[in-house]
Length: 291
Length: 296
Image (cartoon, chains in turn red, yellow):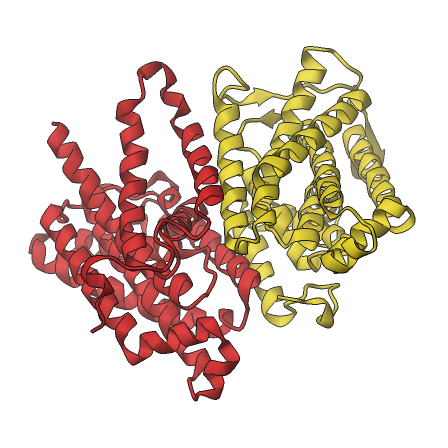
């Protein structure tokens, strides 16, 4: 029983890590302040669940197609959204993406008016359980490899240049606007991918799983890990999932309510003691190597 | 037509509460460029303090507002000194301040949800005075609305007086404009920042009590959405501007009530944010903001 629970938590951690890596590309490497990341996760989750539910007789085949399709769909949607929204900078971009996230959540809440099988605010039930530990784990490895190559490519270096100094990057002939859009859309596509995995892991979706608090959770993870550090993001995401779940087990029943009191205190303390995050912008193990 | 005017009145009522919260947001953002996510929870604390003053101590309604304003101010000063001031002194990136504010917000919500503090349940708010309704033609105005308008107006004028006419207000504006120069002029920047947090919290505290009286149900997570919307209002009007925050709050309040009345109450959150995004794209400095005032 406890094993089954651990496997679920570990798969869940893999999903969260994929999402967080996407946000790290957007904010950590490119410096685009986004507070609506969970909305894209929600899009991927709901779309893929809708597909597998409609064609459930085809089993894993339709699952793989649904995951791929919803990743591409999230990429396209976020690219379209990026066209107007990335004209904004810094805090204003954060507020606009936060607003977008809340709009998506409200639309999901009302989705059952058009698609009754999406359940709206009652939640979406009856999704088949396709995602298992190996799929989640290898997806994560796959994403890490892609991300590592992306960051080490010419594209990744141009993103870093844009983050450091937009004007200098522009003077070097980098198309700042286009690279930013691409980075934003790619990061969101990772969120959509992780959402699709998540949907078939828990087999139940609710709009409140993808509200702005979840976006903030993802932001917390990448800041805790260290902005612009993949190793930091991965480790912080796993720590975040396991500490929050672990406190459930360690704490005696009487003070279980204190779990969510201890967590923010740890957060404030970490921000005071390690403002640059756990890893700063350093990498560990083979992530350190230049490709 | 009567229905329209009636809803407009309800929109002004909601807008007044938003205005009181959004002023704190805009002042704190203006002075240290922090989106203070915990501000909505200070508003929640205000509502709860008012609740206990009214039910347990059976205080007069105005005294309850005054005391919960003072308590909120003290708590926000303590939070500022413990959580934000050490970070500011170390010159850490702004994202750390933001994450700390989120941490404070989670802490306040979950700590007050503990059974030994306020408890996680919804509490019915007392009505401290008799509700009298006045009829103007077909329009109905309740005494609650009149009291909310009067108190909001009084606090806004008081704030306007403090910021524009007193020495403290001058110091606040100086610090918001340029911290280093202000400190060279002999202004104690730290104290002014604390004071700004205190004034913002006091206004939010008053807003909390008024909110409780208008929409008589409170719980520890009640501050999240009003807090966000008050922040949206501040951005809409032009962040850092008192007049902008008030204008933005009334717009958001009215839009929200109209959406609920004429379209569907489930879409009320979405419309407010959609308006925000449209305004940001066409006029990023906000409705009343000046172009050159943006330092972002």
